[in-house]
Image (cartoon, rainbow, N blue to C red):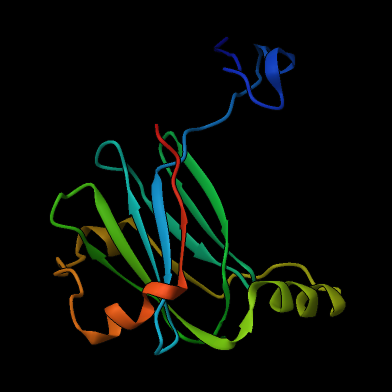
Amino acid sequence: GAKYYSSGGFGGDKMGGEGKRGALPQPKHRVTVRPDGILEVTIVFPEEPEGLTVFLSEVALHIRAKRTAMTMMLPRKPIPGAAMWSFRLPDKIGYTIQIPADISIGAIENWQLFNMEGRYQTLMSYLLPKDFAKASQKPPDLGPADAASQDQVFEAEVVV
C-alpha cells in the first residue's frame, strides 16, 4: 500500500507508517474585513487547484482541493442564509471568496455564542468546483472602501 510520512511539526516522526497521512500544505491566504461587512478571503495556490470546494460553517471556512486541506476560523460571524461568491485573481491560481458577515460580532464572541448553544457546525453555504470554473476575474479594489479597511486586515500566510 501507499506510505505517507510526516515532514515534522507537532506530530513529528510519530505519524510515519503505512496508511498514515502527513500534514497537507496550506496555500497562502489573507482575510480582510471590509467596513460594509464583507469578509474577503484571498487564497493563492502554488498551482491551479484540482477539485476546489469551499464550505462555510457558523465559525469557520473549510477549503478542500486535491493535495490541499485548510480550515480557517473567521474573524466575524457569517450571516445565516447569505450566499458567498468567488472571483478568480488575474494570476489564475488564486481566488477571492466574499462572505457576508455581521461586523458587530467578532471571532471570540461568535465562538462563545456557538459553544453556549451546544450545537455542531452545520453547512451554511458552499462553493463547488463548477462555481470556481465559471468564476469571473475581479480587479483589485483600490477605492476608498479598501483604504478604510487597512486597519482591519488579518493576515496568515504559509510559505509552501
